[in-house]
Length: 454
Image (cartoon, rainbow, N blue to C red; front, side, top):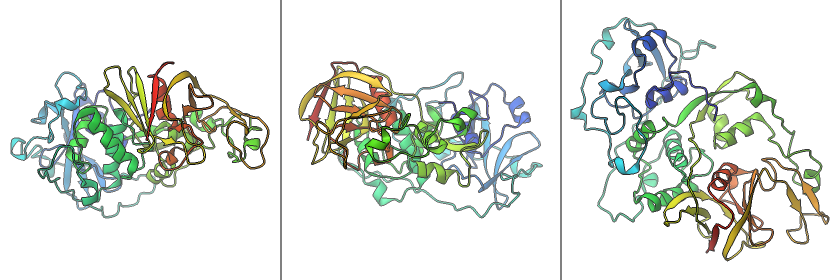
């Protein structure tokens, strides 16, 4: 992923995420002052910022020492960027002299330190310092509107059996930013929530169940402290800034994708239809959500900066067995020891064209596949009664990846419509998002067992 973030490469994850979201710009004075140090953003109580403000709700100002302060519309300082070593009690998250990697077993349920262990006044000179105001919207020069402040109460911890799911998302209405952070965290760890859209839907809940199977831990979706601190510790927070390149804008694209297979077969390739669609898939996002985060943006212009989610690298490992769970609409991948490596929401068969039953094996893996439409052995679409060859491409009938199964004509594959995964039916095969199919394909070889269960 070629993400352009305007900050030093080894900056602390919290500060980097704020910069990427457009809330900071790299100031030479601060860069010189803290060169080579890891930075974090703390609130007025000296704790890592729990709620990241939206662009337009705060201003960034420099004091006479070159530090960046977050100031709200009432001229109140709400946060400050400081070197990581000045932040107390976070050795389990930020280690001096090196990067720490996420390991679920290293994190207690409440990893942030108690308030009384943190300095109550981390920047006493900030309110009295001479500041230089900076407008977050220099293009229009407009004054930000009064911010909407959302207080997230601490999650309750009733004594319930560990295996019982906490209905926290139903008891507390989560913001889209909170759900997005959860989706990004799961996505980075190979427990896919499907498209990242900021919605607490069925695919997210299935992913939380899979996380419990893999780790023995129940994540409370309302526990913002837990999710934010883990994101900060490994890969940075949920949002980043990406600069659209000339290659992104160039395509090639097609004007539209016809529904009729005979018309599909006439195209040179089943390409993306726009830069927006291509970037949404690259960052595992729902197209509508990507546009919502970037209103009035022309995605076809090189050099334009957009807000995206910061997905991680693909999961690695060696898959020995795959379970295609028809009832749960989920594919789970296990290693030779029976440990869950990855889980993906899936669309598996339909009433008219059911998927296989029992056990089959993967016979071959084919990236960027074409598709042969044969009404005699597949399904009948409209008046098409001849064999048709549909060219390859991410918008092809089987997406950008095909894993053929030992039962003829069936496979595990990608899809041109990632937002429908787990919510619609297929023509008997197992459909995943293109990125999930690519990740799974990188961990399997011919001969891997696929078990279909009801």
